Length: 160
Image (cartoon, rainbow, N blue to C red; front, side, top):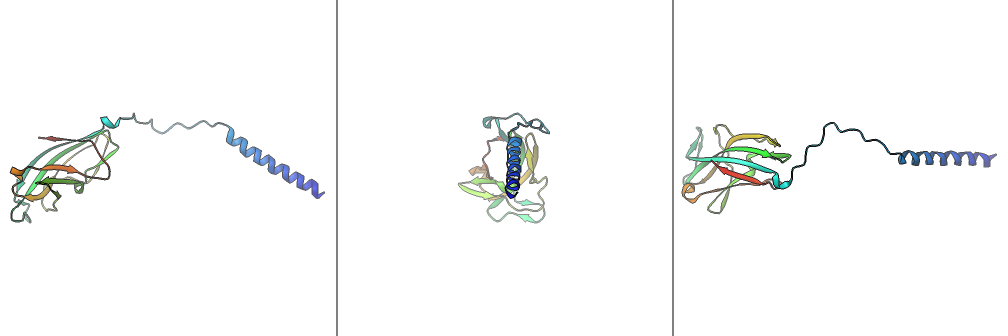
């Protein structure tokens, strides 16, 4: 009697295992995605276009005055994302190099149309201004703008 119960239990366990294996072997039909995938853009075709112009000033607003021997270099930026999933316009990612010295964005009060820290999705555009406190000879020494974030982007700088 016990032998028959053990045989019955073993048969049930074997049947259950066979059922589980068989259910995993039946091909399932994948459900359709909510949205069709976007066409892939090659890395070479992706770019960020940043059009810029600049001015210098001794003072921004009522309270932000440049230190002696320095001026504020104010950049007017127009940014467009062409192909990347996302691009951050956080002003802290922008730098200016003057005479081989890299300057971070200045914290000033009263800058009109300040660039906001937003993420531009593919096709997104943003515009605004950022300021850097740099040596007053920036006009003769020249400057380079750099963008340094957590990934590399193909950036096309266009002077206006």
